[in-house]
Length: 389
Image 1: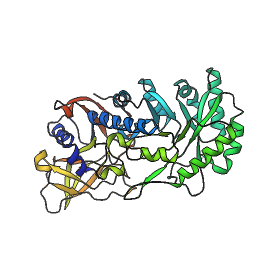
Image 2 (image 1 turned 120 degrees about the horizontal axis):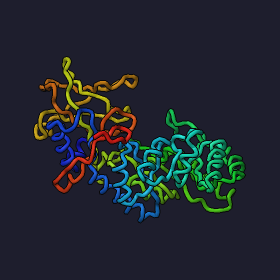
Image 3 (image 1 turned 45 degrees about the horizontal axis):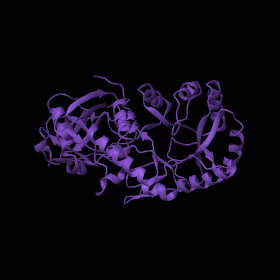
Image 4 (image 1 turned 90 degrees about the vertical axis):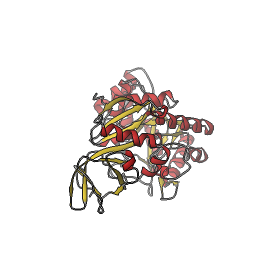
């Protein structure tokens, strides 16, 4: 999906990733992250957000929840993280990363509420009055008042499978009345997801945005004060931040923009540069298909193909198309169409596609100094951010 743009805008990453595999420094099924470029992308996002009056939380799930990467992003100016689930929140907090938003997309289990509240997140997103009460009780015990975001949803909104939940628009007023009676919490704003989707040509607002803005107006009337947050995540990037401002949002949550891998980044003219590739190895061939060690595939990756060979110069013009993997299948291997080309066992396969590292079985290598010409390995991590070596 991003091979061409990576070869065009960050060939150093592609070449060094191949070098790491050919010299045995990394294993097949490994993502390679370019920390220099992630810092650069974060700075572009910070500058764009500042000009537009938008606040940002970083999302780290798609690049493996690695604390060292999160710290580099923090140092670049995005100082708080949004955690997709409470396990990510604890992992980052224990590494010293400040938390911005917890609870969206995954609510906090009852047994974890006390611990998450003690991590001092700026806001916690809730889908129910019951969860707001649990948070209120925990906050009271800790002598604080916790700010909440309400996830709101209406008929016609986009909701991905496995992400159901939130306050229906017609129920918001009643829910607000009940939550306002809880002494340990304060309603700070609203959120929804996804607020933008790629239509094949550009990113466009979804119906969720209109729901978000209607509920925000309703809340401000009910509360008698302006909201601290109108949080509109999904595909937050330099190209979409001005749109957040125009629509009246206050917060965005860049994730794939940090690695230059939103769908928009297939197109020319984006400020962010590609900062991530995936490296594997040909395991065997069968007929006209070369099978590559899997483990890092993501079903919505739109994987198109890979560069294959024994050296980067050889591979640069040797691209094989990928075969489609059925959604119900485990990616023990991924296939590449040989189309009469000679492919050998042990050949390197280099990919660049959209991923969510935290749901894979891949290892992750972080490289620093690549853009200055003296690359070093920061470390090797598992897909949940634990340092392996």
